[in-house]
Length: 262
Ligand SMILES: Nc1ncnc2c1ncn2[C@@H]1O[C@H](COP(=O)(O)OP(=O)(O)O)[C@@H](O)[C@H]1O
Ligand SMILES: [Mg+2]
Image (cartoon, rainbow, N blue to C red; front, side):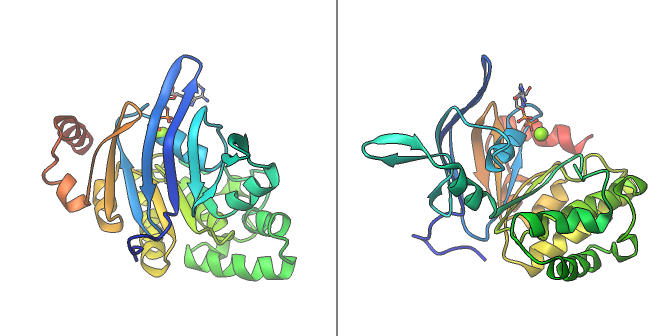
């Protein structure tokens, strides 16, 4: 599902600047993702892909520009003729629409699988324990982890942990799902299981997805747009069938041949 022209984008970056000390990672970045779009970010290591996702999770703060979610300002708004930071409460409300799955899973290690999934729905959304458990069980079924419900996450393999992390993100009913190299830390033989779960989500929901991946075949299957990123800028964007077969930019061509020959 892609939104009609004129619809408000799910995600919009306007001249976003992000620096770490003297290192300017994003230098006035502009891009938007339409409602229901599936967008893949590709680009060399260190080019700022994770930073973009972390800004969207408010795990990092920008140093300039504007980020909007469904047209709602996420960082600053123009009020009384000047830019002011939006109140923390409103920022948290907007943030609830966004879920993220990390390369390193980031599950709560001292909790069981079930507890990991019901924690935020209960404490952030105020769901009852009963409702949170019912939804968690549905999701565990969906990611093929029903049998591990009461295991500690430290007792699970990487692939299993990642499937739990996906269920945990979905338990918040996000409108936007961010996926940061979710298969990069996994053994090759279990990558397929995790990709299958994500393929299923892409097919059966209309969640807006912004993903970073080096799995080009997967990017091709699930995304309708690919953004090639280099030094904090988008240097090329195209549908996957175009960019993967006939990239316009030399830099994209070099990057893709390096990734494929890996
Ligand atoms: N917390 C941090 N402190 C300092 N520098 C950081 C931090 N996070 C990322 N960077 C730097 O920002 C740049 C972009 O990193 P990142 O967004 O992780 O790139 P990518 O995900 O494309 O590999 C890199 O130069 C990295 O070293
Ligand atoms: Mg990264």
